[in-house]
Image 1: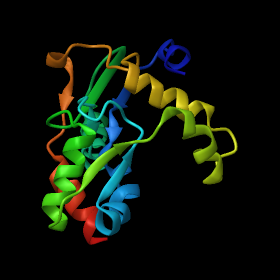
Image 2: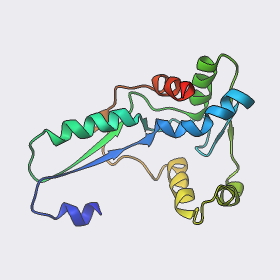
Image 3: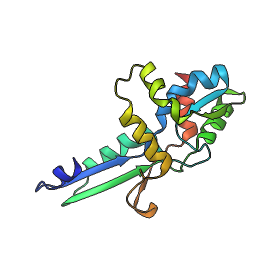
Image 4: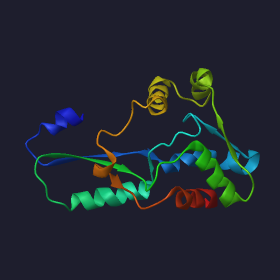
Length: 162
């Protein structure tokens, strides 16, 4: 889509946000009730670029107010990259009891996703493989990326209160 739209004779910006921190909403109940979160992001100590949706909205609004010519790509991630183990530790800090991350075996993904009502889990599985294997990564080096302001702890606190 970027290739097709990028050829238009108008200024255009493509905002590429990282993995949304709010995806951790799926883990709140498990962290609170079972002291474990299941992670499809693996290995558990691998830092992953993540961003708060509020930062995505703020940056998108800022971009709409800018003037530019041609085509630009804005890659956006949070203040720091986050590991699944750090997500578990942050939940533990907020909830007040130990929480650990547990890797979900790749061999179980398809059946698990289908059991949750997903008719075609392959694209999601390929996306997860891309993060895990490192072939989904930002195009530009870190110095050219925009950094969000909101950290994981702030996002998880809101999710836990919901």
